[in-house]
Every structure is written in C-alpha cells, then in structure tokens.
Amino acid sequence: MGRLSIVFALGLAACGGIEPAETRTTVTVTGDVDGRAPVFSGAGWAWERPRADHGALGVDYYELHLVLTNANMDPLVHLESLPVLTRHDLAREAALGDFIHVTMIRRGEGEEVENNGTYPEATALNDTAEAQLVFGSQRGPNEPTQATLGQRPFKTGQVSSWQVMTGDVERPSRDVAGALDGRFSLDLVEGNTPLGGLDLDVQVPLVGEGYGSCQLSLLSRPEGTSCFVATE
Amino acid sequence: MIRPFALSVLALTACAEPYVTTAMGGDFSSADIELNGGGWAWWLTDDGTDEAVDPARLQLRFTGATTIDPVLDYRYVNSAIRTEAAADWARAPRLTLDVRAFLDGKQLEANEEYTKVHIDPDPTLHVGRSSGLTPGAELPGNENMVGSRHEYVLQLSNVSMEAGDVLTGKFNWKVQRKDDGTDPAGVMTGEMAFNFSVPVVSERVAHCNEVTHFGVAYDHFRDWPCEGLE
Image (cartoon, rainbow over all chains, first blue to last red; front, side, top):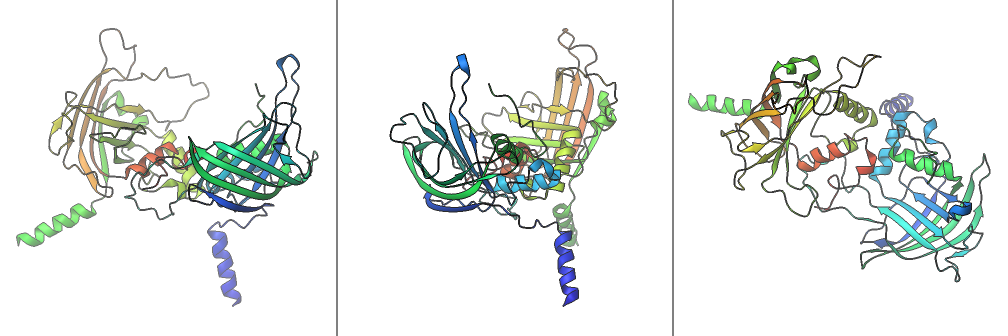
C-alpha cells in the first residue's frame, strides 16, 4: 500500500500535474447566453480605476472591472513571480475556458462604488457597462486530425441592460488585497438580437488597478509585458 | 505472383514516412536555408471573408524545424512542447507557398506540370538563424532579399484534400535578379528543388497552429479558425 502511494505520487510529479490553487473566488452563474451557461471555475478578481481630474484636459471616468476565468491560479500571486512555463500553462487554461471581463463605467458625477449600493443609480444617466464574454473551446484534447472548420464562434461585448449590486466592498491597501462581494446582472445582445442574460454572484479579491490589469495582460502574454504603460 | 507484390507496394505506400528532400543551388545552398526538416500541406477553403475560396488554395510548408508535428492541435499540448515548437518554427528557415491556380475554376490535378502561366505560389522565404547572430550583426536589409524574376514548376503525383492522406510531388523555384534596376545589388539568386511526400493536415488544425503560433498566442485560442461549431 505504501509503495503504491509512493508510485502514484511520483507519477503525478512526473506528469507535471498542476495542484489545485487557492483561487479565492466564488462565483454562481444564473442564466445563459446563446443557450449556454458559462462556467468560471478558476480565479477571478476585480479592480477599480479611479476617476481622475486632468485639469484642462478634462475629467475622465471611474471604472469597476471584474474578470472571471478558468485559470487554476491564486489571483494574489503575481504571475510574474511564477516560472514562465507555469505561466504558459495558466495562460492555456484561461484561453481554453470560458472567460468574462465586465467593465462598469461611471461617467459624469459618478464616483467609486459603495457598500450595499445599486448601480446605475437613478440619477446617473450616463453610466454604462461593457462585457467581453467568450466561450471556451468545445473540443477535447483528442481532437481528430480531420476536424473541419466551423462557423465563427460566439463572442460579444454588447450589453443592452445591466445592474450591479454591491455587498461588502473592502478596498485594498498597498500590500493587502481587499474584497468585493456583489451581483453583476447583464443582458447581452448581438446587433438587435437578444442573446440572454446572466446573473453573476461573485466574491473576489479587489486589487489595485496596476496589479489587476497586469495580471490580465500576463494571462494572454505570459512571457512578459510592460504592465505600466502611461495612458493617453 | 503479381498479387502479393501489388499488396506489398500498397502497404509500402500506406506506411511510407513523409519526406522532404531538397536540392539547393546558388545562394540557396547556405546552411541558413536547410528546408528539409519537415513539411506538410493543407487546403485553404475559407479565408475569413464571407466568400468561399473556390477552388481551394494549396498551402505547402517546408521548414528546417524538426520538432513540429503538424497534425497536433498545439493548444492542447503541454507548455514545454508548445514553447519549443514555437521557438523552432520562429528560428528555423521556412518556405511557405499559397498556391493560387488560374485554371478556369478547376482544381489542381495530378501529373500536370504547372508553371507561372497556371499558378501563383506566392512564396515567402524566411531565412533561419542556425548560425546565430554575432554581437556586431547589422540589419540584413529589407524583406526583398531575393531576386524578383521567378520561374516555378509544380507537379503533383496525387491530389488529395483529405486530412490524413499524403501529398506527393515536386516543386522547383528558380530565382533570378531582374536587370531593370528594381532589384538591389546582392539579392539572393539560385534554384530550389523540392521532392516531397507530406501529410495533408486539416485546415482547421493547420491554420489554427499558424494563428496561435503553435499554441503560444493565447488571444487567438477561442477564435476562428481554431474554434467554431461544425
């Protein structure tokens, strides 16, 4: 019995199996889009982009970003701290799975979200939301070599109506992540065709803007990227 | 007596290993253009526009890379193999052909000799870096490193569009310098001759591997042609 366990453990190590990571993410998805319910079993995180006053150049917007993936990773471990091959493994997991990036934009007088808030607020006519939802691969690793081309896969960024309800919002400090608890409700369309709606009940780490956006870019460019490019 | 011989020939054909043999002349006999590492073929029927590509365009790939298995969907391979294949493809020399046929809408046929009257193979040659760059290396120039007077001959022993089949044939490419002053001095000239028997790869797998750079360009993983309902 002991020998069997050792052999099994060695086998796992030799195959380079990735151990489950603490994703610090809880997601419940209700609803479907185009007849499919996305699955987000990996890491998720959120960040805020503060509203900034650019003086004569004007005032820009506050944004709240939410990313949900199937990457088996701890979102609070910076990807650049991992070996590059591990980053490639995580990038593949994320790229083969369902993925969503929701951005809530508060224009005008909109400020950062608060505990137990509901957005858009009744007086905020210019608040908007965008969503990039991509369904992952429908193919298995034993894809037949004769596989033929299919129709273009589904992908959308069009949101017809939306609501964000926050629970507890704990903002990050310089060294410690915060947390976001909330519900993101989205109705999606393609052109004028309704595709369905999703309610995403999430509990995710709330991280700084630089960290959150850098993690996202490293998931698609795991060999490295300059994460802190000045915005226009 | 005849039947067993015929059977053994059939078995040989079915089990024959793919091969690419080359005869390189002139400037193409350099070690940086060793293109016999591997080869494969696929047929482009959909170029991403609304109109079907008809007749399908034969795609031929010859590379010095030796680690690439063209029938794999590299998105599903572990990262060590993907990154090595991507690096091998990038640094090895390669010749890609995108063969447009001008045959009144008809497809290429076996045992016909096609020249530039019948086809435009649109060759793209990438010179490898097998010798490495020296610290003082200068830019080699622009993309037009080969002469612009071309002669082609393509002859296929069989024409199959089925993934898993083998495509066998010959391709000759003669490159000369144009005398009208359009070619700068020092452009490469010479002749390449390929004898090949290469696997026909499914369009989806082959095209997907190219747009994902053998599984490391993750932004394209969920896109057509990699994905899409059949």
